[in-house]
Image (tube, rainbow, N blue to C red; front, side, top):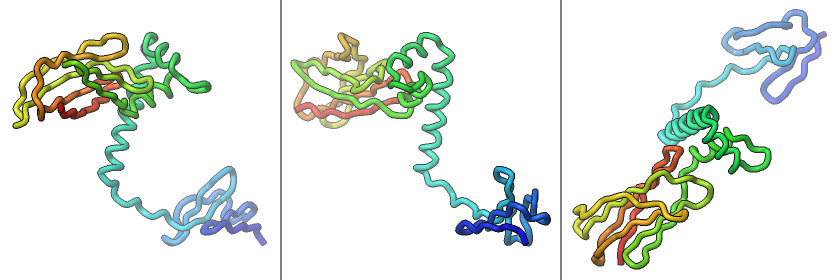
Length: 184
């Protein structure tokens, strides 16, 4: 008789002359597969349920991060930067992937009619767009912040209470962080 080992819902046949090397579906009830030189018998697979919008968005984010990391390792300057910020045992590709996959966290502070924006961690910010809206939502002023000593600064001018400051922070990986700051 053949040696058959049962593991939950699958059976592994090692020395059966009849099923050795078998693959495919039998009678719509049993599927034969080959794994590491052994014939495995199991139930037919069930179709996956449709993907949720969150899963689809995550797949797109993963794909974009992977494409960014592939481009980074082709550019010697960018590859050197990501190798410099990589953790021990991590490649430049992995560091670039993480940078693209995760949006930067942004700290905002306002002092003396100047707004200062700083990205936490190792994210490199490429540009910061600033838009000022009055209390009714009408845009008063727009412009780009200037990089000064690891801080992006923008002169606000005369601000009134209740006005809003909108920020669009773009990092080198293509992430955009949108943040609203209410002036008080």
